[in-house]
Length: 109
Image (cartoon, rainbow, N blue to C red):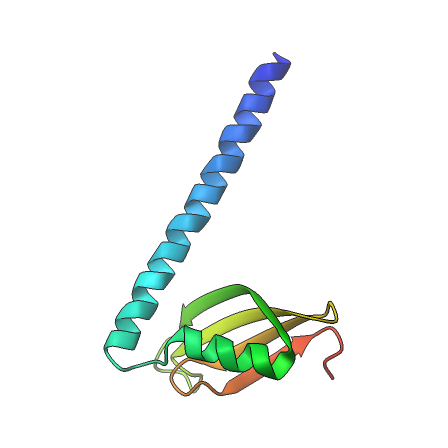
């Protein structure tokens, strides 16, 4: 019975991971299409600038598309950087311009 419980937990965990991977693939497809249409800058150029500015490495990236009827940028990248000092920095970037529109995290005022 105990083994069955472990199997159920393992299967649930795998399904959560697979769902997250599918979502990431959809985000990648939408971002790639927006780059090809000239709506946004490629994330790689944004990453390179941020890693130099904050002396660290990207640990997470999310791509979001907002409702165009708001005053917010339509496309944004949410990026987390782990600095060489061990600080985690959260950055929101306007994907169309590459401008930082939000900044927070450890040691950020």
